[in-house]
Amino acid sequence: MKRLFVLSLFTLLTASVFAGGPTKVNEKVLRSFKATFTSAEQVKWYENDQSYTVRFFQGDVRYIVYYDAHGNITSSMRFYKPALLPTPILNALQHSYANKTAFGVTEITSGENTAYFIKAEDNRYWYSIRFNGTGESELYEKLKKQP
View (cartoon, helix red, strand yellow):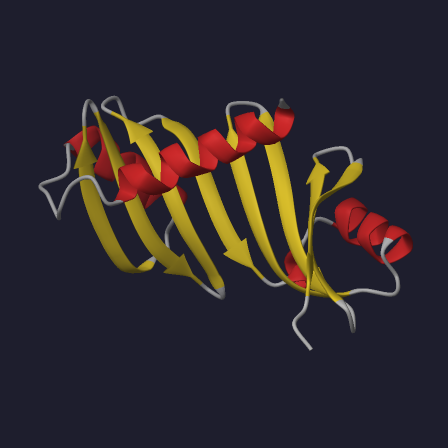
């Protein structure tokens, strides 16, 4: 059930990014964005029904952020390297999956909930490992590599 919820949320959030083209952004939303993300680069805005989506880079992190019409962030996705994980999550990853090489993180935040999907590999498999904000993890996906 959790997996279905996360997959549905990810699909919905990703699909909404492509729903519209570049648009004129509401002043409340733009003011909120500029106050929060002061060094954003390659910024692209999209308008959805009663909301806005912005895609951009800040440093080495790629962002997709969703705003309501009042300038409030409703959810976000960040894509980055494992070294940028919060320390408790990084420590849990290194302890629980020491024999795997992590190479990418997708962080999904919606309301008060944050999930970290970490891509990792070993000689035989690709893995998706899901961590919640407290460091609890589950093996979300395991795919066998082709010989």
